Length: 282
Image (cartoon, rainbow, N blue to C red; front, side, top):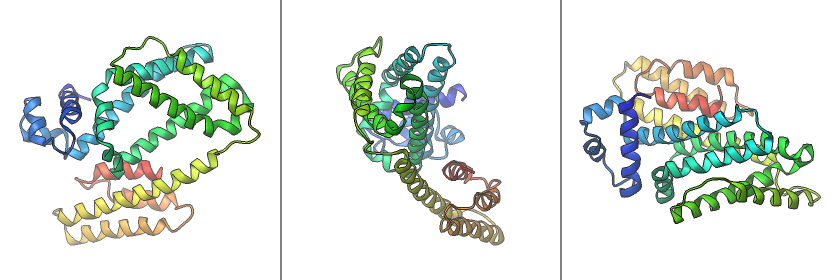
């Protein structure tokens, strides 16, 4: 990401955290960033796209920091502690972003943002499986979904306390002790309350809903774009074919991929096509 784009993102995060996402105008962002509206639109097509890029910027930065720890040769327990510490430190370093999320709860209802957050949740779920397997062994496997939900709850409460107290953080020992206690309790149960299969089913339904919304966004954009009638009809037909594929269980990825390829070269909808490919995993 170039420096100017990153600078605009950071200024926007601060404005959204202090004034709110909806009250903040593009002109407000331009003024505090020292740029014209024309310069803004060179980097972002809309305020919604800027918002998505903010989420992407934060989560990709967090993943990069955690990956640096993963690549080190450490004992599983030490690696887990360091990864959690990095997570907490990054949250505190990007306090404005977290405050923005907490203050603007309706942002999570934006289907594109919601889908991106679900993708991050899936990545976190994979991390749980790998980390807890190294820490506790195979006997924990039936309880992985239970433990992941408990860990999410513990982590959110811990971070909220740190933010409320305006605290700094050195280590994550107390947090990890809570995870150990949760694991001991779960292993004492005969069967898990929740399963990964249940999680997979919920994710599948959410992905389909997000795809439907994205397709409708593309359809609306096409109605206002300068295109030949032949091209417009071709693109609308591609959307209809993809929607029809949702009736198949599972949808045929080769069909969806083929239809999306017909949209790849259309300026103005690339962002939505990219998200669709992520959602549909093609």
